[in-house]
Amino acid sequence: MASYYHKGVINIRLFIAINFPDGVLDKISGIIEKARENSTSGRFVDRQNLHLTLEFLGKVEPGRLFAIKKIMDGIEQPLFKMRLAGIGRFKRPEGDIYWIGVVDNPALFDLQRRLHEALEAEGFPLEQKKYTPHITIGRKVRLKEGFSICSELDGMAVHVKKVDLMRSELTKKRAIYTVLYSKPLEERRKE
Ligand code: 2AM
Image 1: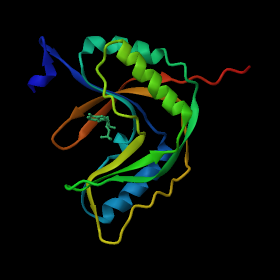
Image 2 (image 1 turned 90 degrees about the vertical axis):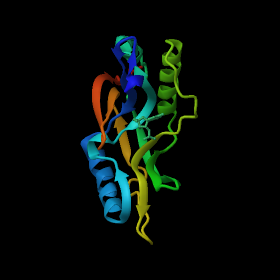
Image 3 (image 1 turned 60 degrees about the horizontal axis):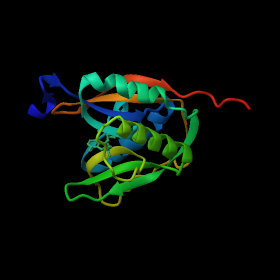
Image 4 (image 1 turned 45 degrees about the vertical axis):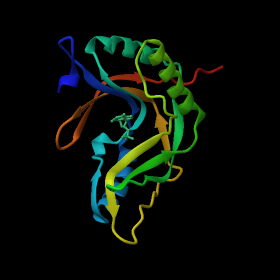
């Protein structure tokens, strides 16, 4: 608890993400359900928590929210299309992490890089690891012998029309994510 407090202010845990339309969430949830039925253990991500993170900010003073919104308002990236890729897995002794990848996409990487640079220039301490776009679907997962998660959405198009500032509250049972602010991406201007 102590780490939430700094000079008497309660910090909030934030990240910036792309959330998905219902059709995409339905498809991913279907994959998760099959995996859940064919697993012996695992913490699978709830439908409403599925997202693609652009930047994880960690604990931030509420007074800094305005600066983040201003940076998001400055995004010049027009709306774009990305495609989902296959299932990835990080092997872990306690059970594996499974995720859905995204087909290499210059608009996505450009958006992420610009956000990252703008947030850093405003003094937000960010992680420096290489950006690997992924949608986590389950953690600590052990699948039944002989079952492997089949993506079914390889190549599925996702139209990215907005970028969301998310609050993350960690409870004992689950994470609760709330959209605090949305920045709509604009139609590409006609020449
Ligand atoms: P993950 O799915 O790979 O765990 C909210 O926690 C989102 O921020 C998740 O998408 C999570 O990615 C991402 N994230 C990135 N770095 C994080 C960190 N150090 N701690 C928690 N979440 C992080």
